[in-house]
Amino acid sequence: MLYKAISKTLAVVIVAIVIIAIAAGVAIYMYYLTPRGPTKLVFIVIGKSVHPYWSVVEAGVKKAGQELGVDAIFWVPSKEDVPAQLSTMDSYIAQKVAGIAIAPSDPGAATPYINKGLQQGIPVITIDTDAPQSNRLVYLGTGNYKAGWLAGLVAWQLAKEKGYIKPGATIKVAMLTGSLTAMNSLERMAGFKHAIMNCSVKDPDIKGNINIVWLGPYNDQEDPTQALNLALSVLQANPDLTIAFGVYAYDGPAWAKALKQAGFPPGKVILVEFDVTSDNVPPLVEGYALATIGQRQYFMGYYGVKLLYNMTKYGVEQALKQFIPGYPNNKIYDTGVDIVSTKHIEFTAPTGEKIIVLSLDEYKTLAQKLGIDPSLLGLS
Ligand code: BGC
Image: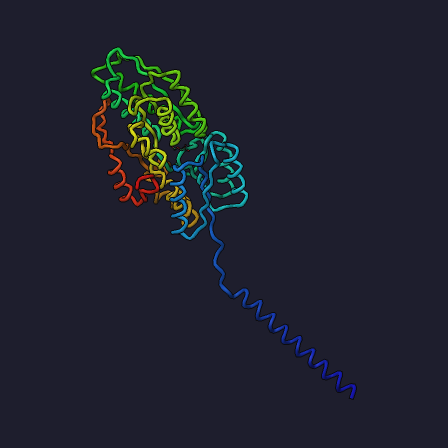
């Protein structure tokens, strides 16, 4: 009897063990058999400051991320902040992201970080502003010397139309910028200055007979409050200012606000801005800014992510060959600029270039054609 009961219990236990073992086996088998999606690729884009300019870059980053089904992260410091940019980059290198695009506020300081990322097998490119001494794979952004040059040609033309450019005259030109280290700022200012100097020599009405007083560059470190204070103090010390150049997106609006606060009538000072954003359009419409250089920063974000993705998918060399005209001799992709004002203007500069300035309406149509939502640019 007892023997029978024991053997019955034993049989139940054995059956239970067998069932559990089979269930566990099936579970393990199913676990390894079930297809799991690959972990999402992560790309990081590091900008320079909080401004509607960078929101447009971010929109491009997000759009590319959506289209590719990857995580495209966009990060900016609140104002120019080299250490914050670099520590952020370092932490993403440690996380072994799939690719990094950075707009280095200080190319010298960024170079070891860019090279470190590359050494660890992470593709690194620059956007908006370059670090050519580093091993960055490519620069994707505005040709800034040329863009500054165009700003200078327009400033000369508008100042001449206003009667400020006359033989023997003295003109005062002030530059307000957000960085004295970033290459885009330095190149823009160099191009701007060279254009005005060239015009002064080549303009047949002037032939070098003009006195140009250069003020600045004043550095607001991409801080709008600092930009406004600097602009106000320049205007107070120079009520006879002829030309004001807003080198970064912040700077035109800061000049415009200062001109308004200081009681200057719109258009008295020839203000040329950079960028078309919700911050830059009102000064144009109110007549304080007379022209602006529109960058195509949407594509810095959009193509930046797409290019990094292609590098992970097809290999760095293949992706670059497909995307960069003239690669490997050329490692720059120029996203292009447009000159914009409230009205369409055409003129031939003293340097011989034929210049076309688009009206805000024409620019809006162009943006639509390029696939950029005009409301992102402050054009509705
Ligand atoms: C520049 C950026 C800068 C932004 C806001 C743009 O014109 O290209 O480098 O961060 O202005 O200041």
